[in-house]
Image 1 (tube, rainbow, N blue to C red):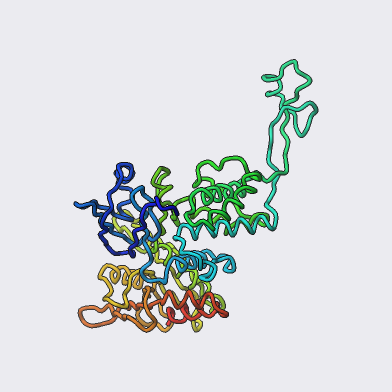
Image 2: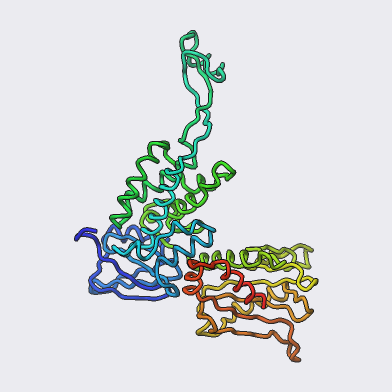
Length: 431
């Protein structure tokens, strides 16, 4: 970046810092006026050109005229670890991830790292040849091709036998799969701050723009409309990274379209940690005789007796179920992005876990039902075990906390035996 680039302000998630010598531009104030950013990153101007920044559980960057604000992960080694979590949660292509050695020339922001992933997948698709498909086309020709359009012919070319309105199919690359990649590469080429990433994005964006010149339009409906099959399944990871960049870092919707969406790139670590743990448990359940289902909704647990209908659904983050020792077994798992190794479980989380245990839990040995809380933490830290008892002392349920050392787990997932990690976590969770 040039000498006139705004200063970079860095703070960790869940912290507040005051930065001196920062005065928001009037354009920045207008941009932030609607409050759509406040739940993710709160900015407050103080006297004497000082800016107070309060971060929640979102990591990434917000670019303003006065400064670029970077929120870094608190429980991880850095932005590369966030990238690895995203990739594993999606079941991505691990060999395409950048390494510390590959980034020795600088320290790109999380947004630039996502731009790099968009470029890596774009280059990969170009090497293998971009997908082509038959696209319906309507045109006026001198000879019939495909099917003649009689209504159009009559209304537009009445009395003109030299021009024939036809509908036919062209085999071309200007299809939705390539338009998504072309749009993301164009954004990366325009906005990446790292010079090396920006240069690679420009080199890759050019060929894609020629293959798919039609504008993508509204990003979210376009991404939602993609149907994967054997001809385009290999585009899925490229679309996931493209969607992450084009939607401002939201694993689901983050911002409505508008100026702030192009300036903010923030990933919700709560949702990412949940997706990451869910993937680990799903992988760890394979071969165990049990299955792990993410966001498994169960209606009828809460029942309105007055009207005789379900009051609402109960949806644990993960539900482990099946036969264990030949008997029915169910274990709800709640995933919390909280450092419970250093503090007590909150009453709210205990109440929720207790409901899951009583409503959904079932031990194969007939013992009190249980729920497990998975949270970030060093191996061996925390390990809370809370019994739910009646006033007479009878145990009716249990809540058990299992810490997940994110740095160690990510290092192992990048090692020679990554399959041992989900299997070990699954054993710890199921006890």
